[in-house]
Amino acid sequence: MRLGSPLPLLLPPLLLAGLSLTIGSVAVPIREVIAAVAGTLDPESVNAIILLDIRLPRVLVALGGGAMLALAGLIMQTVFRNALAGPGVLGVGSGAGLGVAVVMLSPVAGRIATPTVLAATAGALFVLTLILTVDRYLEQTVLVLVLGLLFSYAASALAQVLMAGADPEGLQRYVNWSLGSFAVAPAWPHIAFPPAAIGATVLLRALASRMDTLLLGDLYAESSGIDLRVLRRTLLLVAGVLVGLCTAVCGPIAFLGVAVPHIARGIAASARHRFLVPATALIGASLAVTADLVSRLPGSDRVLPLNAVLSLVGVPVIVVVLLRSGRGRLSL
Image (cartoon, rainbow, N blue to C red):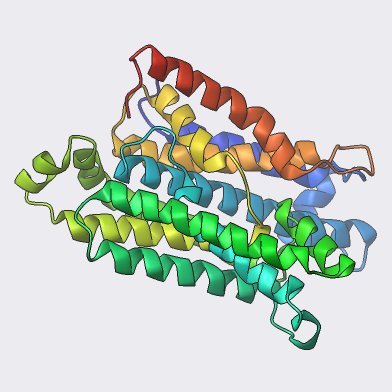
């Protein structure tokens, strides 16, 4: 399949968002959804509370979070020229998890009142600062990749140490957070997520031609007059902020960042970022809303783990990538 423009991909996330607002454990008529969006629905009604306080924030976080994680994955695959690189390779998500573990599992957890989002953001920014500091003194991108993975392992190990000595209540809260969900966001992120995703898309779209040169090798990029260190550091910073924000609010979300860029390449039949950046953002948003909708099991009171649903989609994509790589036909 090939599209000449990413604009047709704008329709699916809008339709899926509307569908996600109407169906769930309680069905809401489409006319009431329209009235709620228009501000004419009685704010005290049950359906208004369901739509405006529960479903709309969740849908907005899913749209923005899916787009941001997919873009972060595209950045990683481009910077490291590795088809299986994803948002987790920098260790920023693990840093966010360590921040949450400190406030939920440490012995002083009951005596501090640091919100989970702030703790996760602090952990993510700490690891991101380490990565960018190390990047200033290294000449090889692959070393940054290795160190990012090492930071990830170290942060995960520290979180596991805290889990070993945690009380059952704190351990349960941490496990619930680690499952990932678009419904755990507090009041403000559902407003911030879509603008953040749009801003990241616009920025990366402006850098599309420079990102294309990275796929051709460092020598070609340098001969084109591009400052590789500045470009790479900028892209790593953008990816780190996107992953940190999403992980802090939603918990660790798997597979989106690895799988979606490959889906976008399949639709584009091209590796040019002029198309890939918006296509990746829109497909990521669509897939996130779909996974969230499926996880809620419409018509049922049960909820499936979000990462389990995403893995059912992500694993087949990764298998296809590996098989194509084994046949020597994989390209970014």
